[in-house]
Length: 294
Length: 317
Image (cartoon, rainbow over all chains, first blue to last red; front, side, top):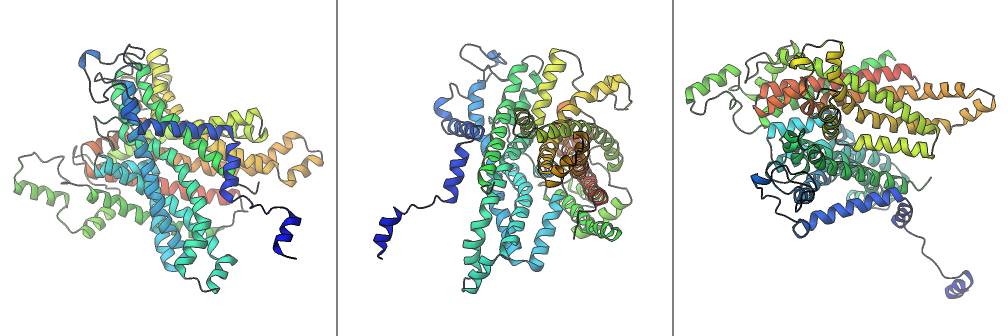
C-alpha cells in the first residue's frame, strides 16, 4: 500500500501538540494565573510608556504643594514630601523597580545555570569544588547577604544589581546541578554519547533541553523575592539613590509623613506588593501547568 | 546515628571557615579607605599610617585574616572604628534583642502557618483551601517593611493602641516581660511573622494533602479509626518537616530582621548593621555579619540533627 493510500484510510495525520503548546493550553484555563499575567503585562506596558502617560514631570517638585493628599485636583494621587506628583513618580518608578527586581534574576539565571550544569555534567572534583563554594553562600540568610554586600560596596544601582545577583546565583546553581546530575546518567544521554556526540552537543541538546524548563520556573519564582529585596535595599538607603523614582526609595523618603499623610505613604509599597504577588501567582500557575503528569 | 551526627558536625567546619573568609573579604571589597570613618579630612599621612598600624590594616591580607579568626575564636571581634567600643559587646547585646523578636515572630508564624496549612490540606480544593492558600501567598509576597508601615499607620497613627517604635517605654532597651514592654514587640513581631506563616502554611498544606492521599490513611479509616485518630497520624508525619522549616525560618528572620528593625527602630542587630554601613564602620559590619551567619549555620546543623532524631526514616549520606 502506498503512503498516500494509508493516509486516506487513516485520515489526515495531525501533529500532536508540543510540550509548550500543552502547557499554554493548561495555563490559559487557570483564571488566577491569567489575571496575574495580565497585571504584570500592564505594569510592563506602563513602565515602557511612562513618558507618554505620566501626567507630570516626576522630578519637578514645588515646596508650595508638598504632601497633598490623594484626590487633589491635578494630582490624582497627591504629592510627595518635595511636592512631586505621586502618580507620575509611581509610573516612572515601575521602570527602575522592575529593572532592579528582574535583572539580577536574569544574570543569576545565566551564571548559576552555567556553574550548575558544568558541575553536574563534569562531576568529580570540579563538582565538589564548585558546589562546596556554593554551600558557603547558602550559609548566609539571603537578606543578610544582600545587605552585607551592598553595604560594603556602597549605595548605587550597579552595586545593588551585583549584590542581588550574588544572592541568587547559589540557589539557581544548586537546582541546575541536581537536575543535570539526574539527567546525565539517563539512557538517552548514554545513547547520544555512544553515537559519537561531543560533550558540548550533549549539553546543548540533551542536558539543556531537560534542565532549562525547571531552572526557568525556579528563576521565575525568585523574581517576587528579588522585587521585595531590591526595593528593600533602596528602602534602607542602599540601592537606588534619590532623586530617582523607585518604589522602595519612595517608601523610605515618605516615612517621615507617616502621621500626616498615611494613605500617601502606603502607595509605593502597595505597588511592590501587587507586582510581587502577581509574579508569585504566575509562577504557581505555570508550575501546575507544567506538571503534565498530574 | 551518632556517626551521622559526627559527620554532619565535621562537614559544618569547612562551611564555617568559608563564612569567615566571606565576612573578611567584605571589608576588603569595600571601596575607599577603611579608616575613612575616623580620619579627619585633613589628616596627615603620618597620622594615617599610625592608625593603619593600630588597626592592623598595614599587614598582608592572610596575616590579617588569621589574626582576626584567632581573636574571633576567643570572643574578640576587634574594636568599632566609630565608637571605639569592643564589637563583640555591641553585637551580643543587640543579638539578644533580635533573637527575642525573631523567636516570638517565628512562634506566631508557626502557630498560624500550621493552622492554615492543616485546614487547607484537609479541605483540599475547596473554598477554604483556596482562601488559606491565598493567605499564604500573600504572606510570602508582601514586602514586610511596608506591612510594618501599614500596621503602624493603623494601630499607632490612627487608633493609637500600640507604640510605633522602640523596645520599651522612654526608648529604654532593658527588656522586661510586662505590658509596658510587651506592647512594643506586638507590631514588629506580627509583621515579621508573616513570612514564616506563609512558608510554613505552604509546606504543611502540601504535606497534609500528600499524607491524606496515601493508602495507610485509607487503611486506618477502613479499620474504623476515629477521625481524631487519623489526625494524630497526620500530625506525626507532618511534624518533623514542619519543625525543620520553622528552625530554618528562625535563622532567616535573625539575618533578615534589619528591614523590620529599621521600620520599628528596634534596638537589635539591624540597627547595628545600619550604623555600621552608613558610618562605614567596617569591623562592626564584619563582626555583626559573622555572628548572624554563624547563628544560621549552627541553627541549620541543629535542625538537621533534630530532624534525623525525630524521623529515623530520613537516610542521609
